[in-house]
Length: 277
Image (cartoon, rainbow, N blue to C red; front, side, top):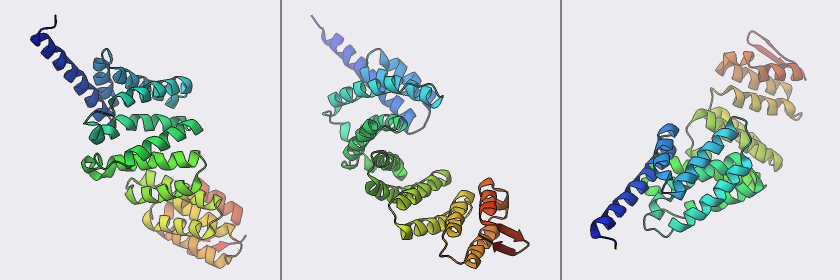
């Protein structure tokens, strides 16, 4: 016979396990503190299948990042984890907290970078973006940025370039971190190039130099596009190079810029710049 005090104790224990699970997710997705998240998941793992799954996901992601193949094990953990998530989607708290539960899965899908993981990521992102409940608590649109970034990458992996472009265009308006923004512009340049949209290639390169004037790699890609286009007069190319040098004098020490100099016979003597090829 189960006593009332026994039931209360069980409920209290279940609440503690759930609290530890969510603390682990907060440490992992909000505070980016893997060590603390592991401690929380380890405490809950003896009683929670989901906590055990998150421990495995973190472990296998770590192995993959360190160059030790763990793709098969990670795929199996994700499959089991998806089944466990289905069991909690009916809970009344799910709509507001689902992004915390799903982001570790998106990070794993992104690392796997396979067609099947891309399809799973697209499904998960679509499910998240259809809901507005969690977005009201998403300060600075941190999670929306991460979700849309994974969605763009998943579309790209799946070969859906038009949809990837659409998402990357949205992501570049949300992203503020310079290194990440540089990568997004490079992605868009490549996708527009592949689509044969020359005008958009020029537009994204020009916009990149205006938005990130201190980015050497963005300037190098812009100058390379200029020099590679035979329809552009070499004197005009020289002006572009001069603009880059005035903005970033140290770009002359950039290895990629030096390769460009050699390929297109770019000479710099004081303020005089010449593009010979």
